[in-house]
Image (cartoon, rainbow, N blue to C red; front, side):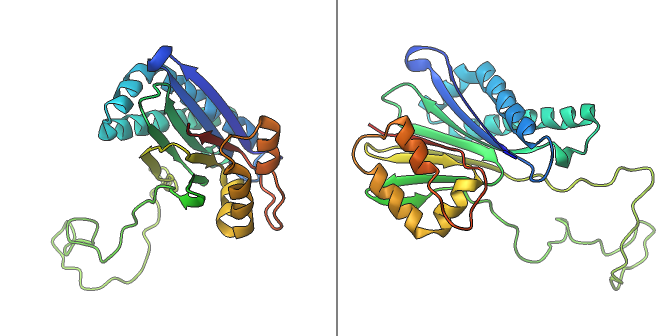
Length: 259
């Protein structure tokens, strides 16, 4: 069953216009995966559409901090709509969810900023000077021991008793509180400056995994996409769907050739 969805939309007019490319992947082995993916794309498109003028101004003015926080809020709200939809359908939120990956491209030819944002698995790659660069934003991981006051256990109980050892006994969940939900996937953001001749590729995990794991695929696409002119739609679809042994997930990809 297909799990991916793709949406493109243009908001505004002239040099103030903003192009959105959104793609989503529904949860594996769930009956509503394709519907959740399509709904995620629609919700983020509506959110971006309502805020496109401000987003366009922030991109042109290189206000990266404002962009990151604003797009984080729009993404959270859009995925929150999915959780509400899951509740209406009577299914668990984990069964009706999706990874969401987006590109924002300003129509202004003088603005070379390209903005990526989203959550979930997939890839963001750039073909520059004949070489692929994996520019997927990395998410920082917490390392080191706990620091007192920031997550470490207290030295005393509320009653004043000293705690001298951890017996490793887990506290049973309270019947009056809902069970904790699994952590949400981290938000990813990147604003990069394009150069003439670049090819920027946004894709779901079905294409990102073989592109990272199989050098032959990267070499093939380098040869096909380094001809100076972007391929036609039929050629692009054929290139992006070339078979790679051991990888059978849906592939959704969008590429931008920089003039």
